[in-house]
Amino acid sequence: MRSVTVKQLADACGLTVYSGQEYLDKRLIKTDDISRPGLELTGYFDYYPAERVQLFGMTEISFSQRLTSENQLKVMRQLCTDETPCLVVSRSLPVPESMATAAAEKNIPILGTKSSTSRIASRITYYLQGQLAERQSLHGVLVDIYGLGVLITGDSGVGKSETALDLIKRGHRLIADDRVEVYKKDEFTVYGEPPKILAHLLEIRGVGIIDVMNLYGAGAVRTHAHISLIVHLENWSKDKQFDRLGSGEEEQELLGIKIPKITIPVKVGRNMAIIVEAAAMNYRAKTMGYDATKTFDENLNNLIKENSTQNK
Image (tube, rainbow, N blue to C red):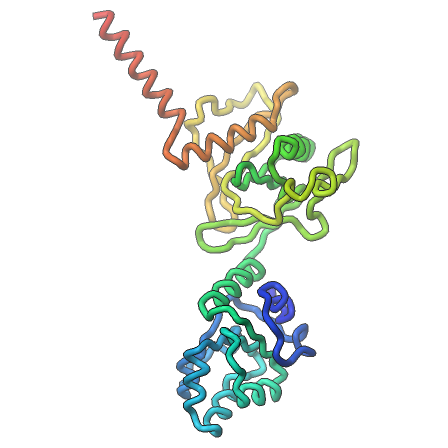
């Protein structure tokens, strides 16, 4: 099971450490769900999700202040379990003494932020979803083409990295080369990013490994992208029929989500970068309601009708 330390969460979300600094690397977060312990403050703990980050906003803090000191400490001690990774207080609200005492007893860090409760909840959830999501490592190259995440796949040596280099020179951005870490943000979207050891790097046979950010600037790379299209490069074969009109729609499943796929034949003399770029632009046009294949079909049908009329 994947996990994130409280220190990683604090650094990524800009949280201030109020107490428990020495336990930041020891407390692990294993779920992207967040708990706002409103019912628990009333004493109802039957379904308390102790393993979640516990977020306290104005509602929770103000309600806890209405409790007697004895009840307040009792509830806070029930909130602070061995499973609880950390407590987060929003809006720069003061930390109740009972919370500080109970957290110290269980070695639980208390973090704070000046952000609103809703905003910090969204920020924490977004970060945890990306870090804790189910992941899959794929062989391929991920490139940002006009804001569209295009995953280029194909057999080793077919020219994926060389195509990516040409695309970078045309102003597009590299996300990952050779290995792409794919993860699911939600039930509709799949994202890709490079392994840390390969970030910004591109391998070109005969040249070796090049640092794209160093050679082409920070604008030539991205850290991650939503995968919208898969372009599969395949060596040209006379025995195989490739789609010529674009009417055949392929899909490939990544982590249970179907992604549109285009298979492009590779042959000496074909400029693959321009072809992949055109494929991405054509796909975007389709998502915006324009389909060149349908236009061709309509033109063809109109021509047939005209010829039929003239021959009568």
